[in-house]
Image (cartoon, rainbow, N blue to C red; front, side, top):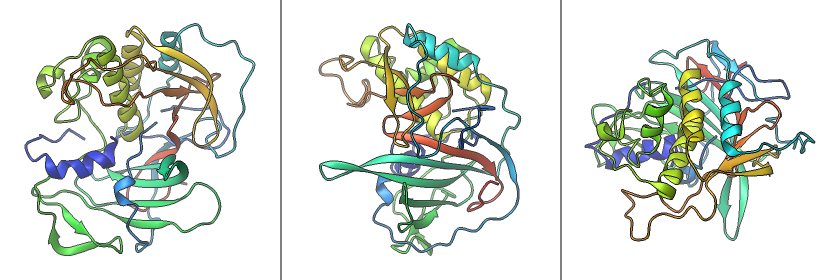
Length: 341
């Protein structure tokens, strides 16, 4: 799951057509949002790499934005009246979205900082990730992994771009190995899906497609997926929405369409006072534990055993993340390694 996982999986999907072009915002501090937006663990494949690359800050930030309480200190529950339904939470989140002032340009990068809960033995550990993902999938990015709190070691390594169907190899020191390529073909993985629908009905069709990320964004028919129904549709749609909200730049009409599309689905549950990995409290909406896939369904036609909840701030309705992932900061920058101001 997630953009970086799909970037990796693109090496074994040479027949899949690349999507189209990211999303922008900074989620930090305790200020009210001017625009907002979660994610699933996407860096597990990289944890064996050692530190090796220095992060360099260059150039100016094109656009940035903040959500409330996105530091690692819990904001605590509020006394506000809980919502009556998951659909209400989703519709209020859609209404609270201001317009995004910028559409990223090809060649730019989506900078994302998050806190994710990673499995470790019988328990879990919180890690802080920084990712510079190419808006159009054409440029090499950078990834850093470190402890969620404190001054522990941070690993830094390259995120190579696929060019001419070839993916450069990354060595154990985190650097790209000149002249060496992975054996499997690849396709570019951009961080902005420019052709995503903005109509809620069309977006629901896209979200309900188990193969939504297999090729150019569009309808389930366009990407070859089979439309699930009932609990299958609910889980598939929330899983795909989680990935969109976590890993891609969405314009305000796109994001509004995501929330309004999910609000149309029956069977959404609401859970109050849920905490994300950064310690923020919010309201979680999503499939219930009883939303199980159809017996005997295959992975290509039914959801995997993952039930994604989306967590929202109960006062501002800002999207905070999922129980496994907390968005901290996001912005569009001009260069890989550049930190937003």
